[in-house]
Image (cartoon, rainbow, N blue to C red; front, side):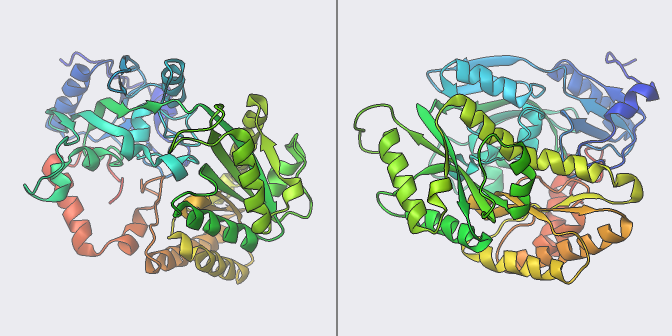
Length: 471
């Protein structure tokens, strides 16, 4: 008899079968391990009996990757230890079931900083953020989760435990590149290759100060031109501005936040750019340091004026409460859309969002293309918001019924094919899951897809892990 508890009461199990995507899921049982050793035993038993395993965190996935397709659900919520926060070597070592925001707060209280900031950080688990290579608004400066993962403890389908670490050497010609750094194979693998039971992530010095802001533009095109100018400015030896976040609201996004905002949002604005900028409280800075508040604010306002912003309407949030209000408005858009889309799920509709990204120089072309496709249909105009600094705006459509959903998906498929022609990606941060696996054929040739399947088969020969994800 196994030493772990197998929960088979369907009144309990059903509550863990799907995720934020509302992808329909089902499972026979739920297991809730408290340790790596329990995970090992669970996987050995499941592999022996060829029982599918779907590993879940807090089920905040937007792609159905945490929705089970039979078998057992492996819930990591009982594995919540922060094992170490090391100031000298600047790393944190923790188990996967911690809420990401709780881990980040603990690290911040220690005077250090864990940079990845997915929008769902208050709803997602640490392990899930690694399994999806999560990112957020501050990716503009700091990059995605992958950049910070130094080492992993992973349990394979067989129950074998791998302890893998990024190479510390600068040169290596031994074998194929992906296998020289096994960490990157598991980051973003969406539970298809193994179960992460421990992760070591790199920490950095806590930023001294920052302020937030919102700039407004008369047209979406002007806002896009501004973002392109920001990217060009960063290529200078001494950039004028050095934002850590550059986020877009189109006119529909502004209409969502305007009624609820404590800040004045001009009626003439057809687009807004949310930004954050770090600065130093010191008078004068060393080479490579952050400029003082007064200097950087002056630089921002001058830069905005040169780039057709409605400068007099610019919002600057220096105080914590103001900054929190700006972040709340940023997060209000997706939460509003989830609520609106949820009304139509019963009629075969709902919210449909994109996750593509293109090189920033192609941003006008892809947005114009997507808008032209949408204008040829009778579907409601999408809300465009998100990580425009990385060429990564989210298109959000609301389908009232199955017919509208079909039309929207046709637009999305055509747009994604155009994205690939512009050397972009279809999945920049949310992963593939089950919902977007039909798009894999656009991203990769069949030979590459076959190679990915072969690698999964070598690590999971019975195919028990995360059935339906990616392929």
